[in-house]
Length: 268
Length: 183
Image (cartoon, each protein chain N blue to C red):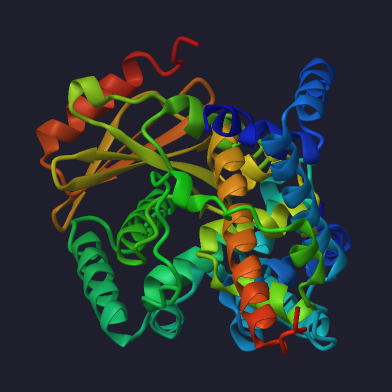
C-alpha cells in the first residue's frame, strides 16, 4: 500500500507531463517492476483518455458573444460617469445585484454616511477626496455584505502576495500581522478611483479590516475620517496609496496602521 | 489610450476566450442559463479591471474572474451543489477506485462521463476542466484557483479517483444487466 500511496501523485504528474526527466525515468523504471502501480497507471491513463476523447467541451451559445458585446458597450458608456452617478442610481444597481434587503442595508449605510459628510460644517459639496473616501467605504461594506471578502483565502503572505501577479500591474507588500493580533485572512481584487486596487483583508476579533493599496502619489501624512462607526485612515508611502477601513475601535485601527507603516516590505 | 481604443483592445484580447470562459462556467453552474449570466457578469468585471492589465496570460486571468464570480454567486444565492460535500482533508483508501478495469473506463459513454463529472464537488470538477479541457499546467491551475501546486496535485488525483470509482460502478451495473452467457 505504501508504494501505491507514494507513487500516486507521481503517476498523475507523469501523465500530465509535470515530472522532470530524472523523476520520469525513475517512475518508468518502477512501473516496469511493480504490477500494482502499473495497473494504477493504466487506469488513470484510460480515465484521461475517456475525458479528453469524449469532447466534453460545451459549445458556446451563438448569441452569447453579441449579448456580451452589447453589455460591454453599455458598461463603457456608464463607466465614464460612474463615480459621479447619483446615489439613487447606484442603489438601483445594488438592489438588482444583491436583492432588496441587502440594498436597503447598503442604502442606509451609504445614505447616513453621506448625510454625515454633508453635515460637516464648511463642506457644502463633497471634495474629490471625500468622494474617494466614500468609494473606499462602499467597497469595504460591499465586501462584507456580498460574503465575498476574499478571492484568495490564506494567512500565508507567500501565498497571497504572488496571487496578485498577472492580475494587477503592481505588487503589493503583504504581511501577516497575526503575532500582533491582526491575522491576515486573504486578498481580493477591487476597483477604486477608476483603477485596480489590491485589498488585503485582516481580522481583529470579530471585525474585518480592509487595507486597500494602489499605486499613487500623495502625502505620507495620515488622514483619519470617521463615518458612522467606521474609521478610514489613509496615507501614501513608497509610491502607493493606502486606505485602511474598519469598524474596529480607533485605537486598534491606529495600531494596525502603525504596524503596516513600520515595515511595508516583508523579509523574503 | 482613449476609452474607445481600450474597449476594442479588450475585445481583441478577451473575447477570443469566450469559449473557455463559457465551458468553465457551464461545468461549474451545471446549467446553460446561469452559465450565460455568469459569463456576462465575469466579462463586465474583467472589463472594469482591464485598465490595469499589463499583459500575461489573458485566458488564465479571465478564467480566474469567471471562477471567482461563480463562487461569489454560489455563496450569495446559497445554491450549494447538491453533490458530495467537498472535504480537502479527507484522504484514504476509500478514495481509490477499487481497481477499475481500464477497459471498463474506455467503454464509458459520453453521457456517463458527463454525469460522473457533474456529480463531483465543484472543487474537484474545476481541476478536471482546467487540466483536461483547458490544458493548463499545475502552476497555471494553482494561480487560477489560488491554491498551492501541491493542493492542485492532490485534488486532481482525488478528482480522477472519484471519476474512476463512479464510472466503474456504472459499468458494473451495466454488466449485471446483461444476459448471462451460460458457461
